[in-house]
Each structure stands twice: as C-alpha cells, then as structure tokens.
Length: 157
Image (cartoon, rainbow, N blue to C red; front, side, top):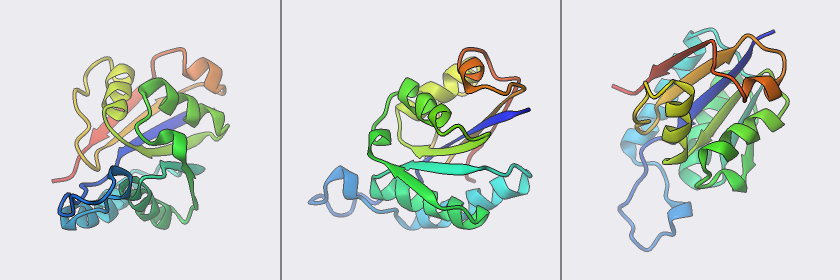
C-alpha cells in the first residue's frame, strides 16, 4: 500500500484591509487565480486524495475549497492547523487514517515540514505551492518515522 501527503500552502492573501484580523484575510486576485489552477495541476498528476484538511483561516479554507471542488471532496476545517508547526501538520494528516491526505495550511510550518520531508531540497513553500510525498508503507506510524520514498514540488507560474 502507498501513503501520500500533499502539502498545500494557502494561496496569496489580501492585505488591503488592515482592520481585518489575520485569521479573516481573504484571497487576493492572484490567490483566486492560482488556487483553482494549482488544484487542477494536482488533479492532472493522477493522485486521488481521500481527505482534505485545512486551517480555519479564511485564506486557507478558501484555497482548500478549490481543491475540494476539483476532487469532489468535502474539506474538514481544523482550528489547530492555523499557524501549526511542522510536527502538528504531519500528525494531523496521520490522524485522519486516510491513505492520501491533502493538508492546506500556513508558513512557517509548511516550509519546515516540506524541507524536512524532502531532505532540505524544498527551501521555501511559496503561496499555493504543492509538495507531494509518498511512502511505500501501510501505516502512518511507520511513514511519519522514515523518509518518504518519493516527492514532488510545484508552484504557481
């Protein structure tokens, strides 16, 4: 069996309204363009996630909804993913028990986790970047303790 983890950093957010709480910032025009484009790019890889989990922050949840629409999956919003560190992001994915998980969240946790899983080959997760990791394992307990067997990276533009 193969396990896969797809990390998606939220798309570009709008900073135009300084009165908005960070949690409530929406996507800007570029983010609204990139999110469906990158979701389609993931569809075209042939990967079929079983579940999508996302931060409750508006920009992450909106990004996740584009991925959910592309795959015909609901998005489970988890408040703990807002500003989560790498270990929590990986743990949350493993806790789903799904074979293939998409996690939509924030930096710096996304970059730290992508770097760790790629052997430091991924130095930065720009907005709406996708990092996919696969393990030829049948247990997340094992997968979270060993390096992935393969990985890929894609960013908008």
